[in-house]
Length: 309
Image (cartoon, rainbow, N blue to C red; front, side, top):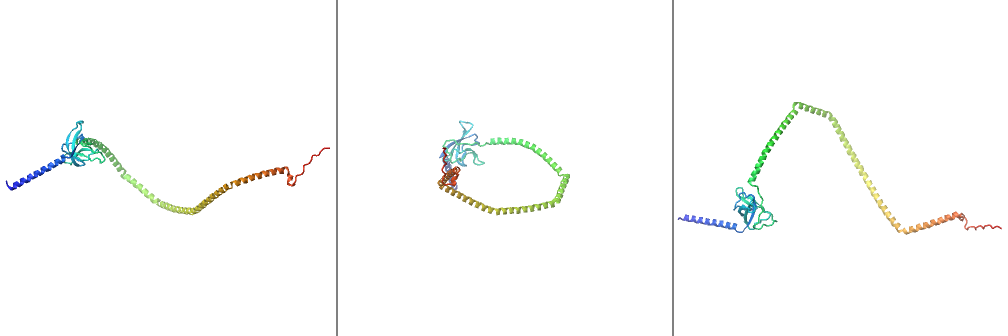
């Protein structure tokens, strides 16, 4: 064996050993530190064991088994193993997904919510069904069938619209014919003549309106000036009236205080007036009975009754 062959064999052996070591380390890394979970779907869509498990688009594990569920055979049980420490929570949703357009099916898990409770190992991940290709094809077929009916209906309606449009065009052609054009031209000529005849009157009326507007503006300005001139005296009179009312209020207060202070004197005066009135009444009665008392100081002796002999 030549030296070149020995060197080539040595290089190939080293490369094989390196590749084996890398594959072994990758398998050890994927197999070590993983935790099991499961989820359920009604349509697996080509998902097979060994398919990647994506958490927020990042590969965190592998699908271990895809089989009908024991309790409910209408559902597909999917067993997965993900890296330990993957924050799966109660808000995380498992659904069928793809790594890329050209790749095989994968199991995609949403990140959920940071506030949600973390799922313990071996628990079930909530799932969400995606529309399968068969369902999409069925819906497209239904839409196509409905589209045929809609096209037929629209075609009939379009034919009716086309007929109405033709009638409208015919009416427009009749309305814009030579006879109607002559009538319209005659009407326009009459309008032009009327405007030419009435234009001086309209100009005169416009001038009068302008003059009236100017007089109205002057009148309004005079009224504003009059109001402004009369406003200041009225304010002064109101201020003087307010001052007078305040003085009258103060005077009434002083009189009230004075009356309260001389209340007992007023009572004495009233009593004296009552006594004087009684005395005047007695004097009047005395004068009525003895009017001579105004002339004589002493009263005359009473006459003796003559005695009979």
